[in-house]
Image (cartoon, rainbow, N blue to C red; front, side, top):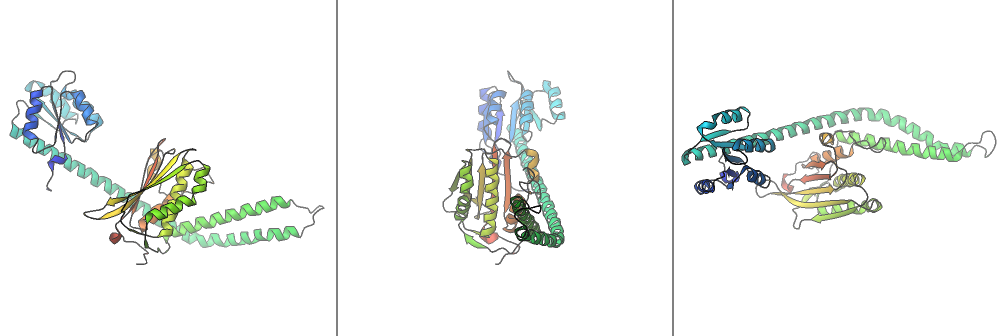
Length: 395
């Protein structure tokens, strides 16, 4: 078993007798990080302010018993290890607590220092193992989600590549006919039974050509998901790339009276990126943020060093807004192709899918945190330069 730093997992001892609190702290403060509280209410307040791994409480206290205190703790922090100190007369309470899954274990009064030391040690080890198990489980779920997403993109791209040729040919024919419209209209008389509404047909032609262009862009984006274009990587100051995209969207932000700020940590490590693709990612994120923010809102873009392993640093770029946020039920679907919350015709739902694909090419990651009604934060993580492994790299 790996060596555990027990002081990293604080313990809270709750007892209404000051002397007991002092004795506990004196005996265990060398081996553990100790907090104390004189009542269940005081303990609950402390738990909201501090990280605690294990809670030990006396059962018989005025105002709130130890078991009542633990039931409240368990409802708020089910991951905490709870240990009750009690007398023989409280065995029914112990049985109920253990049966309900609230208690980790118990200790009968009077307790011996060596016995309690062993129980505390095992309780911390239990908390550590469960925390590691849960962390690994979350990582496995995230890996499976990424694999499923990659398989979905690959299948979609293969399908798109197969039908692209069949779609492009009719589009060429339609565009050719539309481009002939002005000439044909000019050959018609200005008056008489064959007169046409020239303004209508010109507007019809222009709108149709715009829709053809939109279809072509969509086809190109779909095909690129299956076979991304060759990436051209170079070392670049990320701040300059960010500022160029802020400048590009300045008119839109000014029109919406949205404040856009950039905050850079000094001495950022270098990043190797495909500048054009990262510009595409940032443009997508900025436009998404601008469309979700009410008039007078704000966007903040921050860059900072990000520790990756021992002595290595990547870079994180965060785009935060105070917009409408994203419903919790939609968060897991944001990178799915064609998933969009916009009105029909306002977007096809590939922007974030492409962002995810680009960051994957860079050996990085993208994460989205959001709370409905409060805003959204998108986190782009770039690995250390020497660790970047990219498909399609020109290195």
